[in-house]
Image (cartoon, rainbow, N blue to C red):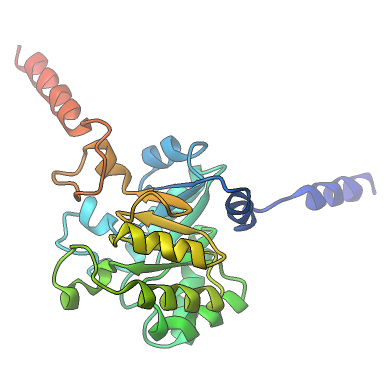
Length: 263
Ligand code: KIV
């Protein structure tokens, strides 16, 4: 009997990380801090400091050296997201859904995303796009999946947009897209590489947080690729601030080690 009562107390006290914390930050006017992490060391470093950790599909380029994110397979991101989630105590962990795993039909998208959630335990997922996937997003959010949107530069469309430069979409169209995503139930929207004035305009005219990357300082929060700001990637995008140069430091370690061994 006592055991049953104790179990009940433990159960009642159990709390899950949810998007509510992000909404509270947004409502209080505090900036939302997000970083990507693909691996255990980076997740440990980011957790406790960031509000959101994104296991971004950029890992295909950053860790595997691919030319774009489109060759990323679901099994690869599941493996990385599972390890990140396992060591993250505080931040909300969001996982990108790779190209080709959510565009076909809402049912297939649900099945793939349910697989990501079941096998990794992540708290939410992110998809790129707008009207063409709005039905799918509604289908997912109505079934309890926390979805983050992504507009502006959408790297999964590199084959049609041709480059990673700033998008030229008008602010009215961007706002229409953001509003549609909001109606579809996303809890926040990443705005990538677009005019800062446009990003501010969107942020002022919707009621969910915008998370900017290369979109100026007036979004509700910011996201960066952790390796970019550490100076670990051979070439950073122009909007990434390089806070240190870890690649140089690692080279120094390799060189000191080599000297010791040869000496
Ligand atoms: O994959 C990624 O790293 C991203 C961020 C750039 C937002 O989508």
